[in-house]
Image (cartoon, rainbow, N blue to C red; front, side, top):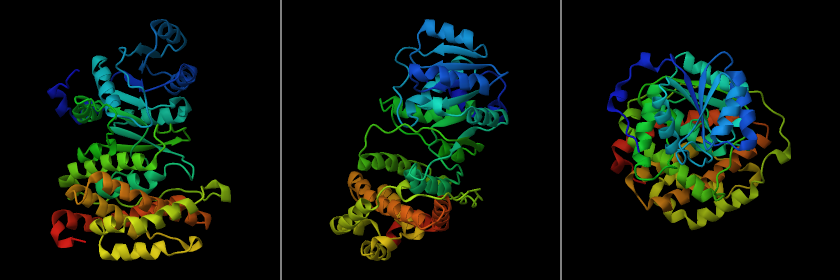
Length: 406
């Protein structure tokens, strides 16, 4: 595996600007969708030359497609170098795009995740334009439906926003624009995982950019099809995401304890008339939470303070029609789990498993609020505000954990 040249670690801001050929890497694309993807790319980048890295494309196909798309210089990755593609961008993706970018002397990159053929031409233009304007990291803001991205709304966006000050609504974006210095930073982090064969490890671009004081731009991306995780087990999926995120929080503790929380951004949101069948049935979620309150109370008591445990007790006794989890309770709960993860209060696997029913309680509350007429996006922003407001609690407990023992 190629190593990252040390001299690239200190790239200046001027070197981050687009001055050469743009590199676009597709992490996974079916042969059926490839031509549609290239049509979008060619039109979005009309008048601009770009190199396109496509996994597992044959030489003959490359030649034919290159004739059809004269502004796209198609290349095939070295056999076996491209990951199979998943539901998020991985360490292997970040290392590969850095390697290909440096080999081709590209000064900026677009990294497009699976199902990229559903990404609109306007979204591609917006990502490329952000790089042309000098952004180090361009992150899409997708138009997600009310049932999509709930882990992002409950956990990833609030934590990233409050702790790192990163404002993008989707901090674990499936498509990204990267300056060469941003690609270098992400590849440096990624190589720590690929070197030990953890190619599917998650990397957090927004947190990394914020910690490095790189410029971050959020662009409108419209609707997109999101690939589904191979594992349908919520416990496994949530544990994987939370573990990676909590580790990132621990890694950059010295940064976020000094950084101010990001200010609230006014979002233009048009309330949508939602039908009763727009959302999933919350009853199984409520039953899971109520059962967990009985079975996991002992574990929760090792993590959460008495005030939170009392609030959860009252919540477990609420009838479905009035079930509401306070935003402040959810924020404080997540922060206490982050602290317990850092202190290894209990086995980390057990800890993350105990978070799942609490997350389901939040989802049920969020859905019931939306059914009552509350704009779902407005509620998510209220949750972010609660996380920002309570950041001082996290900082205090991080510095003096013994003073705040549950």
